[in-house]
Image (tube, rainbow, N blue to C red; front, side):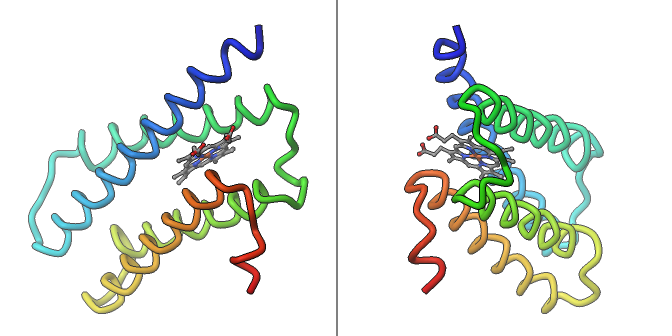
Length: 129
Ligand code: HEM
């Protein structure tokens, strides 16, 4: 039973990861060009996608019995998810100047790439070098 649910969970998780990246790129572009967006796109839909992303991730951990505190790739990935969220908040809400927002944007994309890389290869060594 748990094996049957794993693949749909993973597909949904990867789909949400792609959508969350697209939404982030779009929202940050709107911020940089000082254009306004409807609240549905700045709050409700991103919140829904991020909740799905986190809960499918947590459900997969439960199904395979992997602890987020295992000290493995998953622990590093979760630390990076927190850094990604914080950088995203600087870009979208708290960055005081355009330069700070741009730098945080660059950092967020680099951290996002590391998250995907870690999720795919489950290998932390190159990040430690
Ligand atoms: C920005 C946030 C996240 C992104 C971009 C992301 C991205 C991904 C991607 C692309 C994969 C598929 C990797 C592959 O097989 O090629 C994946 C798998 C996975 N993710 Fe995430 N993820 C995120 C957050 C989370 C969180 C918060 C958790 C746990 C609470 C989590 C747990 C997992 C697990 C357990 C897998 C399955 C690995 C496997 O079976 O191969 N992810 N993630």
